[in-house]
Length: 358
Image (cartoon, rainbow, N blue to C red; front, top):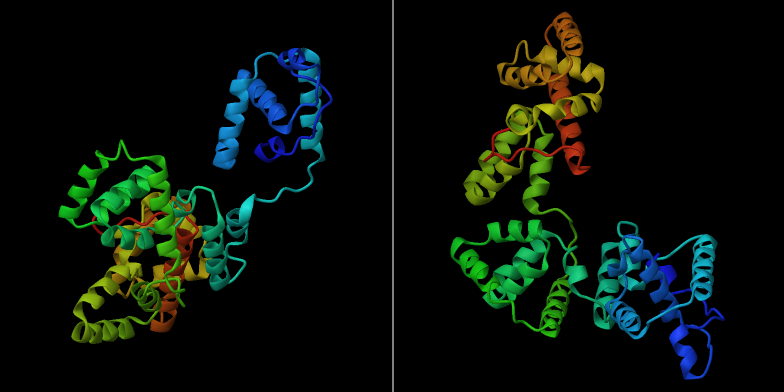
């Protein structure tokens, strides 16, 4: 709708107040847009005007301030044209380079996206904070840690509240307190100053060299060890302890194995996980628990949080399988872990942190 407001063509009608200034004249696009917006607002219809560039929002508001009365014939003609314009639209494209990059995200290479974002940042007159709010918390945290208290306060004030709270919680206690206090002092900061700070931060973040891997080293090692054999995982962690104990501890926190299921999976999510794993793998996991005590708690947790009919069927089939070979047991538990990770990545489930109760 906001794009259509910027495109509607001149209508051969006049705003009533202009008739005293030399007779009827064609309406400008901005005048017609003002008529449509005023009509929709009068009807209580929400309009996504914030998606328009700020200069267009300001121009539209100023135009509304200059207008007074519009005759019914003019209003009807403008509405008819606006409706025809909407019906004629077959496909719409995002406005500006930043919008196009957002649409193409994931379909072009990270290097190309970075170069285009730098180009957009250098030439755009739009709001740099629209770009900043989409950046990952890890990137924003690095800036918060390096910038002054005053800049950090402005940054947190412009970010969405949940994201700002998350970043504030990651700062060291003393700096977090100072930044929080500085937020109370940002009331008199000029809008142009905030814009300049935003542009500076975007430039700083976009200037970072492109990374070959999207995940951190801790995440990559943890993901590999998640599906490694238990013996391999223990040996690697033991070696990491001897080489870099701090890194080893971070990797341990990133690892998620079948033994973590009762502690980090919410019972209500078990049904989703069960649907994502093949039945033979579930049977193998249940059967393996008969001879592997370390699996019992996880298996019982899963059985207790699924339908009792399915739980009983799995128990009976598992009892009939007898002893499961180590390789099959690990493949089956890894399949459950892989399903949990896929559901988490897709946002369908949320794992409980180790500090929280499941």
